[in-house]
Length: 99
Image (cartoon, rainbow, N blue to C red; front, side, top):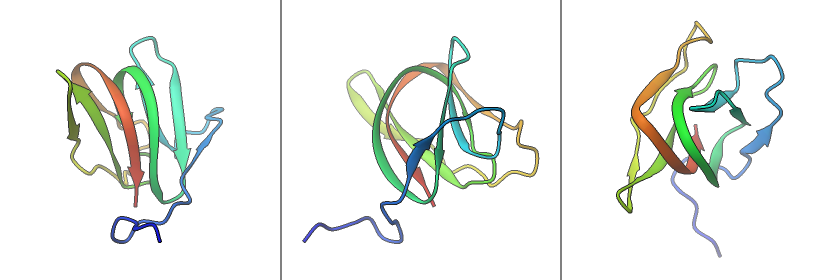
């Protein structure tokens, strides 16, 4: 039996961003967006992420810095879907979690 994190279901999935800003988005320093929908936790590998935009979601990411892993603060839901939170420097994202 596989243990899941408390309150998290494995239904998160990547989606095509298109013009939607209500998805949970990670945006690279070259303005490439990666979007995620639904609750859960997902392993990813996205380099040079500069911004996190929660949209209509409450979420966080795990990132690598100097070979250590850190969780960001929980962010969202926001009413202005253009709201984004920036890293001081681009980071490598290794996990996305949405409630």
